[in-house]
Length: 196
Length: 266
Image 1 (cartoon, rainbow over the protein chains, first blue to last red):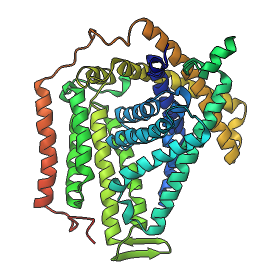
Image 2 (image 1 turned 90 degrees about the vertical axis):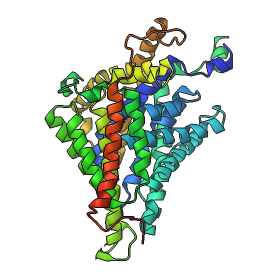
Image 3 (image 1 turned 180 degrees about the vertical axis):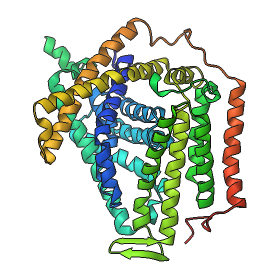
Image 4 (image 1 turned 60 degrees about the horizontal axis):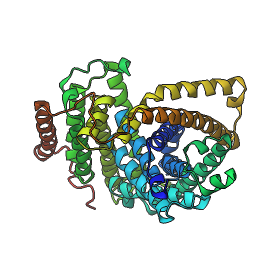
């Protein structure tokens, strides 16, 4: 199989990516109440945990290692939110697609050859910027008091890099030990060498 | 899924799902650029009425989801209300400065969240997943493997939910839920996700292999079990949504409830 064909998303990759996005959605339902608690104070503390919503993108890219995985993961997660009538409704769809796109761009910039923790963190960071772009229109962020605006900016970006990037990397590393990653990743040259 | 529907016979269920989705998605763009508080108030009222008229959910659930949205919308306005910029100060306490302007903008953001949520809910409460994905394939030409992938994944949700309960029970038996602190919280999160992910990935991979063997991902010259087409209800829907949106703007002009016609004005 040549490399080009190998890099296309097959049904297996698609199903795994969507399922992964749904798992994150389910697990974070448990976190939901905690998130809302942070939000009450209006101090933008929630912006730090906000990063966790971007995790599906970088995680899927690190897991599947093919073009389109990050975008698909975030889009599927957003679609599920719309279909299940989650709070936020139709706006989750736009957030999801844009975040996935920005996450994807970072991996594309390295031509899907580098899957290190720094690239993952950059990807999470990019997703946080995407969410910020929508928020600028949506939440009039620039009309907040400057200290509050700065707080939300810093927390959101730190949160994106750490919660979505570094945590995704840690989870993929943990998952590699279980052996399931062999099921879904494209065959590499190392795998062939191991057969010699 | 069957327990939550009270009636799937209402006419909103007969609208082409792709059209419904595209219409509601484009309304997002419209209300993202409305800065008139009166328009938002009237629109929120109108769409809430529409939601109650058309949804196919059981009565209690319909109210429950609405109240969730209300709380969520109120929370989304807190930062702007308490910490927004403004000159006509109403209340001042350390960092909290509530001004007329920040209050108006905060309420508008809350209403905007409410409108987007209620639009999403109108879509969610009148659309079944199976026709929706079939329509995506047929009208929007979404590649077959993506749509079937979504459908298969959604069917796995109940299994995943059950697994989550099992892991929770296993952790409770072993006393892991009693540990406190950030470290324990992180370990717990990792335990949940890694276990869930490993199981789900294995299941998804097995299912996908079976589906590919049955040519689910074939795209040339295929037929569909469900044919989703167009009907007169699509036209009714477009007219109704357009009328509701237009009425929101007119009512704001005829009966302005507040003096804030542009909350971005200083």
